[in-house]
Length: 314
Image (cartoon, rainbow, N blue to C red; front, top):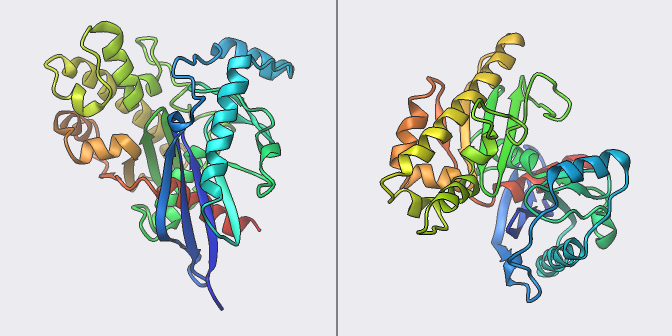
């Protein structure tokens, strides 16, 4: 019997990636097959580089009252995202498809987006899909349930993925915890530090780059550029403090559940930076905890995670 081939689609804040996966009939693990395809939303001819998301307060209010009023800018930007995703899907042949997307969701759409437009009827645009997953969960599934992941066979672990935002994940006794339902765990995007900043704004690559650009005339685009600046240590100290606060919150959760953390995995662009050129911040992160830390740099993992989840959801 041939292995099932499932397409995993990872929709991030700036790009979409498609990765075809083979699901092993015995282990259930997802393995990448063929080359992945990655397309930037900004490659769409109608992409608005000056787009500004609606304020979170307004988004939360409209979501709570079920009175979402999309702006014309949101509609146009959302359409660029939808068309980009479709352009990737059409390049594959597959038995089934799984997709992840950032933001707060209902069963059919995205109702709160920190770094992009809301798309409240997202699934209506895709005849191939009947559900979609949280991007944070997909990152964890990829590390945990794929043949290239760094968390295979672990029972208790923390995942921190840094890109446009922070992808959070906690595995407790072989179960992925729903951070939106577990009141003792604060997601990084809602975790307010003593400085008034969020963990996400201090620890994500986008947050660090934005913080530099807001206070300096010499603009940068990447953490590699930031690491060359003499004053980078100020932002790295904020990142270290954010990391420490987040880990302390997670440690308390594990202690309350009589479990010990086996490993911390730091992935996505933040993981790539720390495993290559981010030597200063890497040393600071290592000094913040005695828990073993692994850096994951394979960008295909969230897509593989969605493929694995789809394989066990049917």
